[in-house]
Length: 401
Ligand code: TMP
Image (cartoon, rainbow, N blue to C red; front, side, top):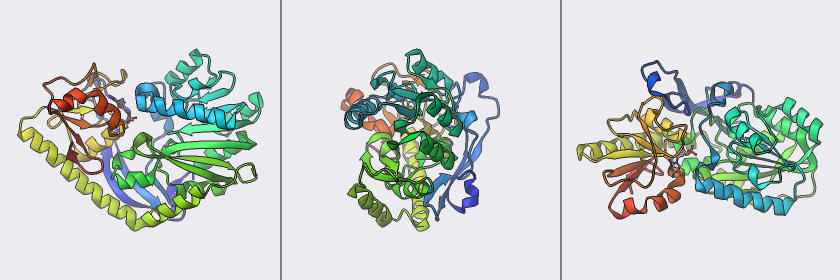
């Protein structure tokens, strides 16, 4: 998988020239030329993998300036808490590795002696290291897996949420996991679901960091070479609809393969996730989605409504740049992340302001950049909704809600 262009990836979607998603700009850089790359998405019909075609070197994206923190939303905090409690009870792991531990939203529910974090973004690794959780500030690879097994022995649980889809070389990922995992150990992965992405027309799941959007079909194919297999799958609500894959070594007979696996493979095949034509149809829905979103925003502008953006997500960078939406259509974005505030959205240069409480009465409409946190946001903004404030979302189709 090192070089997936070789794997006959057929392009089905072109999302235009895009800046790096998480590179929010300071004012002084607005006049400088921004680096952009072409965001194209392709399908590998042999392995059924959907990926972006041109990738950016990881060090350019995951470094000490990485702004995204998992603990920023109640939804994610709750999801990690519930799941950490569940797996500790169910599997009683003596030693766990978390690949992509971010700011410790999952890690913190474990005993400090029982979990090891892996986080290449040094600003984030510092947070958990300072709290006493051993965190390696490196990218996950075979060398690191060897180092950890040398220091701690093989581990019985490896967990990784919203991380593996960010790593280009999947063979390296899974061979390193194989190295570090004990014979009866298990691997649990969580990542956005391709099926949900297509159903929701969520083309903004694609940006430079999201190299892959996985299906169960693709995960099964990727694992084959590594003598690993999925023994259960759960559908979860986070990040706009994700899959949680339970994976074991083929030689591990402690767990039997749940019927869910076959059932979900059939659901994905019936939806057409193994056919190129399904992706072409998705691409034509995306083009329509773009036109409709622009039209709605233009109507709002023509009515002199005050439109802002809610949540300056990495996803919204894809939408805004693809649809060429700038501050003529959305005055500014509100965001709770300190590292994004007082900066500008890459590419389209819409200002980002600090979110300091429920929206004020001078705002008429808010475009939901953070649509994946819709429920949480609607609760927070119940007064805005009560007084007639509206939201615009492009999921599953652009509309005012
Ligand atoms: P994500 O979709 O890439 O996870 O990013 C979520 C962004 O949305 C993050 O910058 C924080 C922001 N956000 C808000 O500004 N307000 C909110 O209520 C929530 C839930 C998120």
